[in-house]
Length: 165
Image 1: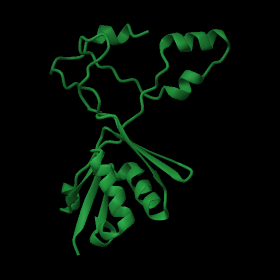
Image 2 (image 1 turned 90 degrees about the horizontal axis):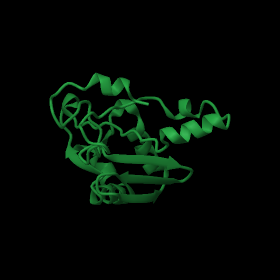
Image 3 (image 1 turned 60 degrees about the vertical axis):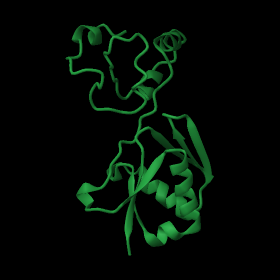
């Protein structure tokens, strides 16, 4: 019996709520909404486990299951994930689960603070990521997570980081 890896791309978000799942590909702005059966919910929870790095193992039996096969094909069709032949565990594909960007800006938090609503910034702010690439609004190449600036190999400008409001 062959085994396969199914991997979600790092630019893909997976959310579960009640009996519904949503997969959103941030690169091509496509989505797939699906009902959560027990089988699909189990696969989604496996994908969401941080230790699995957005990759799960599937047997031929699972791939031949109509429900799972249709779900996988729907995800592949929106370029949210891919199937690959199972190789050694250490050589399996991996992907970083994306982090949703908080849309609130500095002015929003200043107004909230003036109104006496303190602490909301701490609920949203767990990590700051700076892309010092010379662009006022960032760079279109940053639709996915990276662990280093991909634009160049220059050092980050420390004074710009310290001046961040």
